[in-house]
Length: 98
Image (cartoon, rainbow, N blue to C red; front, side, top):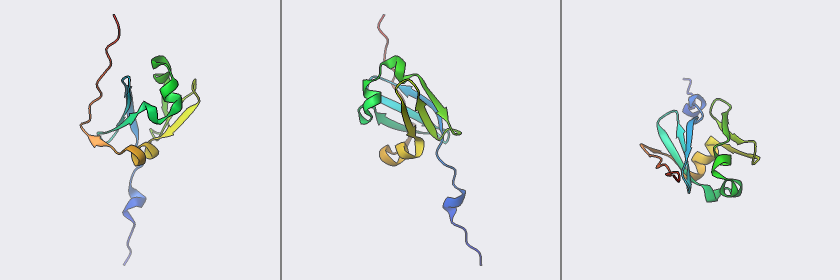
């Protein structure tokens, strides 16, 4: 008999999009889950301006997130390990001043 480890065929978690409010980053995965990350968990994100936080790019087929301006890199699998993910998690948006 030949047995295969199911984890060999599992796809790495992939980010589809990212939102922020004043306190949290919401990483929306391609499988429908969302990772909610307090920005205080990462000093560079905490100290970044809202504009700098939005200056990210998703790379590696959705497996990493990079902020060039603040020199920060995060892996989606690391975020998932550290913060977990939930289906249907929404991302409340911060109202901009008028």
